[in-house]
Structure formats: structure tokens, C-alpha cells
Image 1 (tube, one colour):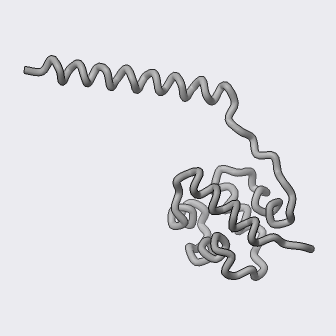
Image 2 (cartoon, helix red, strand yellow; image 1 turned 135 degrees about the vertical axis):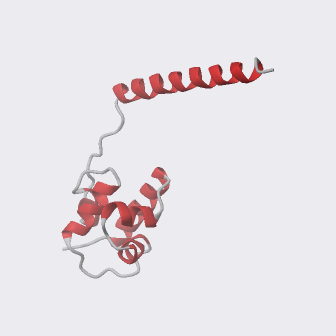
Length: 112
């Protein structure tokens, strides 16, 4: 069975950048050792890994559990993207935050 560890490393690097997450944070969130995370991200050691390692990393990165396993085997998995409902809630939260900032700015301007 062909295993593309380089693709796994690229997927990990890309997702870490996308999320603004460090390898240390990923290790902590996934329960995978920092050494293993570094080896996978930098493709330093392509020894056989326990399937649960890739599952833990995928889950910690907000992907379906089988995402990195699929990448390893050269398969593309459909990862759901944000829906319009997600954007609506983000927009509502942003509107609320803008309102709060405006209230604070007015309070500072009116301050003696």
C-alpha cells in the first residue's frame, strides 16, 4: 500500500497555518507527543504510525477523523465548508461587537 507522508506533512502545515495553531498547541489538543507532531509535519520519520494518531490529529484540527488517513492513502475526503448559516451567525456576532465598540468609544469621548 502506497503511503504519502509528504502529503500528510503538507496537509498538517497548511491546516496549522490556516488555524493559526502551533505544533505545541496541536500536540496538547490531540494528545499526540510534540515529537511525533514535529516528525509528521516535517516528514522526518515515516515509520508506521498507529491509526489513532492520525485520527487524534485530524479531530484536533477540526477535520473528520479519517481525514489524515485518507491523505496518507492518496484519497481526497470532502471536508465540509462553512454554510450560509455559519456566516449569518458570524455576521450577527460582528454586528454586536461593533455596537459594543461604538458604545465604548462614545463613553470615552463624553468623558470629562
